[in-house]
Image (cartoon, rainbow, N blue to C red; front, side, top):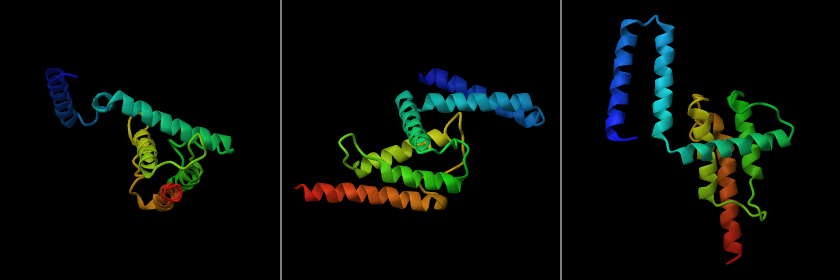
Length: 155
């Protein structure tokens, strides 16, 4: 998106927000503003990042389904999502059976987080820093340490 079209879009959003303040009971205007904001957010994030986030979330959901869990990650309770993430992180392996590098594990978690917090899901949740995801994040760090220990043993 070039600078001019971005400026026009921002001006349009500001105008809609001004209208919203004047007509705060108009639900259709609020829905219109929400669609515009979602569009702005979508175009502000690289398509490759969004595709990668969807792929990580899809892999996570497929893992859960393969284990017999039927909850949708988009709507399940945070305590349950924490348990699912912890289980998923403990099971992550590369194609050769080895452990992922800590940076790769961080990318997987960030992708799932981006998927859950971006449009159209828009969950207000923090799987990276939220206290309710402490045990899942401890597992992620443990798996990163397994990679580090494994690479030291093969030196």
